[in-house]
Length: 120
Image (cartoon, rainbow, N blue to C red):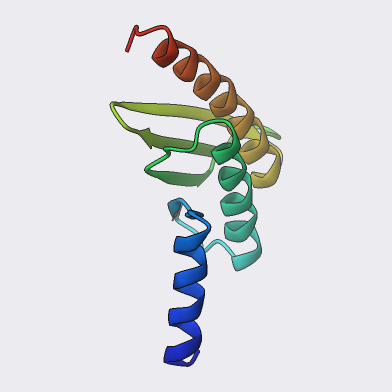
């Protein structure tokens, strides 16, 4: 990408006050493909609609040797003053990511309610 184009994109992002949460994906004992990583990024970016002060996220993908639901997704989500965490197992990483993102969505709603009520 040219330098001028990247500066223009950076300006537009800053102008719209739009930030993409930094997500680190760690796949344990295998290599995750780009499609899976972009799916995870999209799912976690949607959480920004529930609480817009997300700092960053860390995702661990594991293959287990037991049963049909042998894929585990662990997600750590940092928000100012707290750390939210979800672990889910499913037949596919996409399904487990969706379930973990739903669990984090509920945690974010609860966290936001506590903030509004002054309990955090």
